[in-house]
Image (cartoon, rainbow, N blue to C red; front, side, top):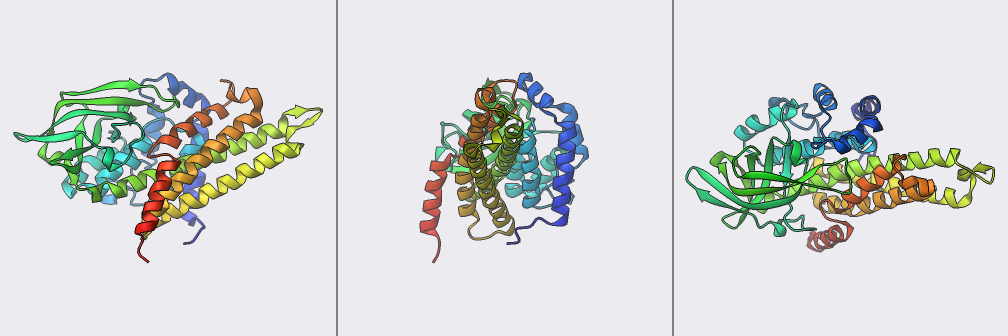
Length: 373
């Protein structure tokens, strides 16, 4: 693995940071807390014009044809800026599901409007708290005249309030299946769900006999779900890495300006040691995330193992870094006036998404045992 980003990836990073610094200030992030959809329309249009929505999709589907590592570079910058809106859900979750599991006709129908920013999507997976795996899926799709009927509910569906369609992970004749369904379908209802990170929106989505056409079945079998889950974990790690880096930067800036006993608190050894530990954790998170992204993009045999290791490490590292940032800011850190509390809340949410550290370490252990040789 080449640990350096390519010239094109460095350009993507630099341009994304410049654009997000200008177009997504913290004032916008805070304003979206009170927005029921959490969707900043002007920013969304700007990202669509830049081609970000279609970045990982093929040119034949109106995308840019870039790789997963390029998406990770962009998501890291979005996590650094706490970008609100459904980019992660539309592109890295639902869009990835169609791209990985859909046939050509389904891709032609669903991906171009997504890539152009005209439509948005979300992934409906969770039914029980803390169950982000295939074994936690119980919602059933039953065959009916002309297609399927869904009965049941999904919880914590990220960005469902702004989605036009959903990818639903369900059971079809006892087998795992991915289905695409329009949110306007009769029988589909949403109940908003409050999250610890109010910059992200979620809902409980109920399916009361909602009809899914026969061509809405994207794929069947657990083998279609596992790669999607690995990609989701690493994409989330990229967001967390960007957030952790920014929390460290805010802490360094505060330590340089906040004075006690007539000198900056950054001159105190205890603060210096904590900042050094935060830096080491950020660099560890970067190594784990980039390697996992590279392994997935290259189709390496240990891609699943790397994804689970990254999620286990990065989610805990981000929460710890954001918590230390709060401590460095003192009592002021968790007040509304400071931005660092927003990163802490995002970290605590991300820590639980797609399994916490304990759940993913168990997956690491299983994968290591099953690994050939």
